[in-house]
Structures are given as structure tokens and as C-alpha cells.
Image (cartoon, rainbow over all chains, first blue to last red; front, side, top):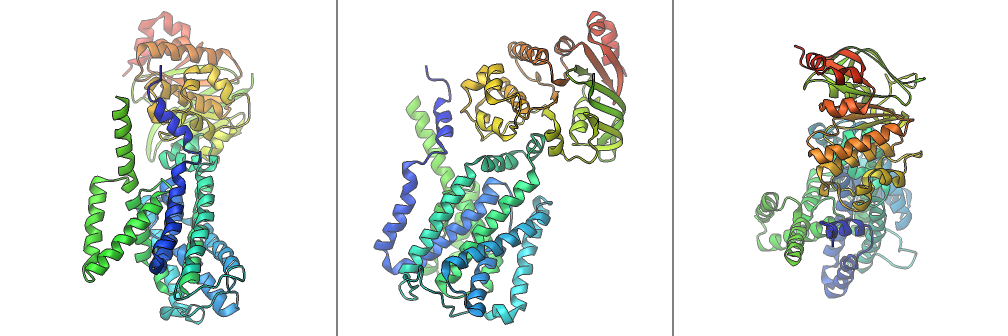
Length: 332
Length: 233
């Protein structure tokens, strides 16, 4: 006889293993490259947003750190490659990504050591303040950052010395963003299914209990925050490299709130929530902005209210609920 | 015998509120003790104080002769305090196996040995924490604490809310655990039948103070005396 809940147990045990459908987002991304050649600029922005949302998912979805200032790290990475390219002639893209990850990670580490001592509303406030401080620093440091005008017309060397970023057709940019996303996703996937990732889930679900089993909670949160910051920095760097410009918008509240909405819409703590949320949000935004240029945010707002009221676990949550009901119906 | 756990004139509580006063307790290595008392007399606070969850107003908590005054909660666990909380507090989305792995440290207690003690958990090792029954969750909470390879195990009302048949099964496991030796155990229990059967030594708490520290047999043999201690106003 099959023990009760056996299917659920099998699903739980199998969640670490690679599943066939996990290849679908990547196939879809490659298909989009061929099917929508005139939308590759938009597609590149979607891929960057996915990577940014993935970095946020690591801290918010898995470690339970609610932050409103994640754009601080996106901006740090974006400005790092911009400043290196403009002032130091360091325009090689891949090493630029490493530099962006190191700078954003370092900021994440230092701020995490201080900020993660707080929780709840206080944490929200201090993450927001950190981002505002960085934004104002970028505004005031005009000699390096271009201040309010930013740094337009940045030039980056071809990838591997061969594939040149094309400002008109975005083919190289799209594939570059896709490759970076794939590498970062593999890293995040391995991380969340590792014992370290399990301990982050434990911290999110019951921090006191994690203390009581001897887990150094603070240290693990700081490590997760640092890795997440580095990934957000990479997303920011890809943004600067593919658009050839950077300005204060990379450090703004709009960007921080936008990525939070993407994750809530897609479903946080699920890895693929970032993918679904970014595509849904950006396609919706794009379509609504085209149809109602002056009132598109109203449409986004209504969708978010509906999601918040009826689909608290986001679009993926709806899919999981439907799948669960289907299973129960089959079992009965 | 060496002292595994010692509380010296401990007064503790939550913030400004004092719940425990002048607690003196010495637990030898390998010794077990049951703590009984009415609701709200400070039994759970006693364990919470040892783990560092409360405000220590006065006194000292020592583990294997070392003061825990400046040791954070996770450091206490690493030094050998295993804690089974009253609410079990299983990590709901992690599997049984993952719940066990989270706090695992090298030592005598491995997953294999834990599964020998709790065969049910072996069968359910792939199930999520929130798919377990109350009894299984309690077993998992004890097993998780054992996986940290503690020197002193603190258990807060492990039989609370369980069906009588599960209480009997769990009591059997607790006795086997006690008889294995080597592990010092503090068992908080409202069920005096379970508590007095578990250990030779019993402590009765009332209004945050120890009002009895002695033989369990005496309380077992003299229910009126036990009732007078437990029901003291």
C-alpha cells in the first residue's frame, strides 16, 4: 500500500534533481531570439530583470530578508563597469562583471554586517536609506559618475575579443545577457539546494530554532546578502554594458520597488518566480504603456491588487495550487 | 561525578519581568531530572534561560564548568546544549532528513542511530515537516536536538497535546534515551506520571522557585504531598 502523502514526499525528495521542464525557459529564451528579432533590446532588459530578481529571491525568498534597497547593489555594479570603462579604460566585459560583483559584494558585506542586526520595518528603512545614500553619492560625485546626467556613450570591448555589442540590433547583447543569466542561475540553484540553502530556509521559517540547533544565523545571513549583492551587481553591470550608459535611475526606488513587484508577481522562494514575474511584469508594462501611454501604471496597479488578494504566492503559486488539485483529483 | 549543568542563584525573566528567582540546580554528567509544576510557574522559562532566550537578572548558568554568560544562543548549542522546544517548531517546508541535517554535528548521534531510535522517522524521512503527525513532529524535534550531539538535552513538555498511546510510545523512547547513559537530560513535564517515571530525581517549581528537589519515588509514593507541592498557592 502506498503510504499517505507518498507522492508529496517523492516530490520533495526529487526537488533537487534537474527536471525536464527546467529546460523550457532557456528554450523559450533562445526561441525568442529567432522569433522576435526586433524585440531583442526589450528581451535583454527582461533577462537583466530576471537576474536582478533572482538575486533578490535569494535573500527575500530563501533567507526571509525583506529589503527595499536592493537597487543599491544593482547600481553599484552598473556604476562600477561604467566608471572603469570611462575613466580607467577597463572595458573588457567579462572582467568588468567580476569587478562589479566584487564591488557590489563588498558593499553588500559591509552594509549587511550592520543592517542585518535589524528586522522588519527597521530593516526596510535602513535598506532604503543605504540605497538613498548611494544614489546621492552618485549624484554628488559628478566628476566620476556624471552626476544627474550619468555616463552616456560608454564603449565596451567585444566579448572574447570577437562578439561586438551592436547598438542597433542587440543580438550580441541578448545572447551575452542570456549566458550571464544561465551561469548565475546555475550558481543560485546549486546554492539554494545545498545545506547552506537549507539553512537559509530554516532561518526564514524559524530563526530562534536555527539559533538553538547551533547555526550562526547572523553570519549566514550576511553571506547570503553578500552573494545576492554580488549577483545584483552583475545584473547592473550587464545593464550598463548592454545599454552603453548608466545614470541615477539604476539606484532609484523605482528600480528597487519594480524588482520587488516582479518577485511578488512571479512568486518568491521558487527560483523560477523571477523568470515568470519578470516576463509577466515587463510584457504587461510594455503592452499597457503602448495602449495607454498616460495611464499604464493604473493597469499594473490593478493586476498587483488582484495578485495580492487572490494569489499570495504569485503566478507560480496559482500553478502549484492547480497542479495540487489535479493530483488530488487523479488520486481520488 | 562532574557537573554537566549548573545554575547558581539564577534570577531571570522577560525584560524587566522576573519569572525565576534564586534557582540553584546542579546536574551531573549522565544524570536525568524531571521538572514539574503548574502552568505559569516558570518551567519553560527555566529551559529558555539555560538556552539564553531570556534576560538573566542575576546569577550564572554554567555548562561543563564554563560560564555561558557571554555565549550566544547558537554558541550554547555548539557547546553541547540540545533543546527540544514545547511547540516542536519543525521547519515545515524541509524534509525530515533536512530537518535533521540542519543542526548535525560530528559525534555519536548520526542519522542512522537516530532512525534506530525513531523507526517512524526513517520511513518518513522524505516527507516535509508539515506532513507529519503531532507525535512524529515531536519525535523529529527530539531527533533534531540529538543530531547536534548534545551533552545536556533540554526537553520542554514533549508529551503535550499527544494521544495517550503516542505518549506511551514516546515515554518508552525517553526511557531508552535515559538508559543509554552519557547524556544529561532535563525534562519539563506537566504529566507527573511520565515525569516521575522518567527520572530518579524530580524538581518541583512554584512561583519561579524550586520548592522540592529530591527523589521521584517519594512524590510517586505520596500523591498528597505531590499535590500539596504542585497545587501550592
